[in-house]
Image (tube, rainbow, N blue to C red):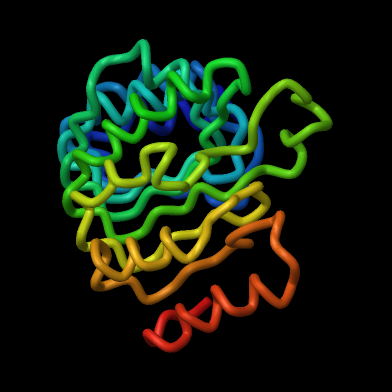
Amino acid sequence: MNLALSKIMAGMQRIISLKFPCVEGNFGSDCMEPLRSHFSNLKELNLRNDKGLTSAMAQEILSSCPLLEVLKVHRIDATDVATGRPWVCLRLKSLAAFFRFHPTTIDHLQPLVLDQLSRLLRLEELHVDGRPEENGWEYPDFQETFDLRLEKGLDKLSTISSLCQISFRNTLQKMTGEEITWMFQHWPRLSQVRGQLNYTMREFDQALLRKRLLRRGIDA
């Protein structure tokens, strides 16, 4: 289907939205080439489950599509972001991707990736859910995704004050009440949090953290 899809895309005069959220493996280099001619117009790209769109392709899209508002892709490697060009998609409102870090470089690379995220001032939805098939099995040397603690750079995201939803399911977070208080202060529009806040805590203590969110009217 790669070739057929690439021919269809090559014949289109203008692509503003491209969505195949439930399709796997159909997007590849054959499709990326015709898509490049539409980067200046592209507003939405949803290939959430398509592993054919590589991390390098996702980084190229983020650094080439100034009108992009929605991006949902399978995976983005931190090394591609750190070595790539700055993101230009400053109108982005919704971003969903599994951000992959190597445990030996996460302390160095996470601040660089957070710097790019911090420039997305219109961001309303951030979904950095882990991918179970890439956590400890198929890719045993990789950390799931961001470590969302203040000591690891969470404060860099104070600029995205329009954030309404954040999810980090299937990740190993170690957030405490300090991070919850920070969210209240810097993300005043936050209405939904999805994911385990602290996998090291007893269930009772985790419930107390969730209760703080619920008291603020945040769906947790």
